[in-house]
Length: 331
Image (cartoon, rainbow, N blue to C red):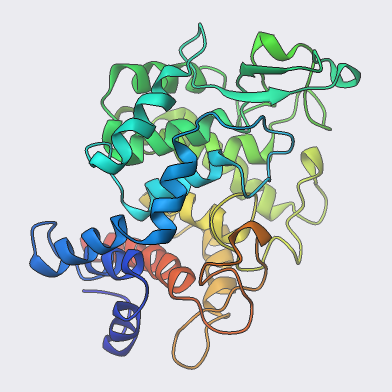
């Protein structure tokens, strides 16, 4: 049974095809072969906005990453199409997946292009490499696209899991990027690296319930509890952190809840519940949610404005709530 009312379901089904598709699959539990699901999926794949994203992704790895919250970078568009439910078996995505899979380091980790200034220990030129604030997002995308059992994906997951600290993941980079690292203490876990590495690993069945994943999740919950005292690597959990924002690109409350909700053991954790109640309290009288912050690069999408409720943000939140409700029903 869905946590969302019939009225909201009807409203969501009137949204763009990716929202209709997600609503049918994740909230109504309809099968992929249902005629309504097939129709919504075909409409999604042929939608001009999706076709534009895929066209850009065919240039992978694209331009170098200059800042990790560059919302218009192909890295974040890859994550977005994976979140919508596209698959590596779709003719529209197969070429993109092939290009992404070709960009791997000697360690087996998936790479992007970056340009690190000599001032920060880099070469000052565009070069392939990886950082724990980008490569886990590629791993996540490939797993979500249906490659969670692919040997290359499993190899990359094992390497990233092996970089974990006792609690979370550090600011780590490939040898090509020299001494570069973020503005924090070397011994501290990086909140964002921890978030997206955990996000990737819980998509891999053999890592989902591992000790490293549980430790990473607990580290993020500990940061919430200590948010008034700690800001490791300058990642705060204040007013900006609590604003509803989509797609999942940076370190914010909805992104954190999306990842932590994948671990049922956390659903009754007091800190998780506190964050969830903050988000619940942002709905309007009809149970819909309006973005409170936006990425300018996504201004043409329904979540790229702060005036009216967003179909997609509302779907994202009810996916989380449904996940929690499903766990409760199983107990």
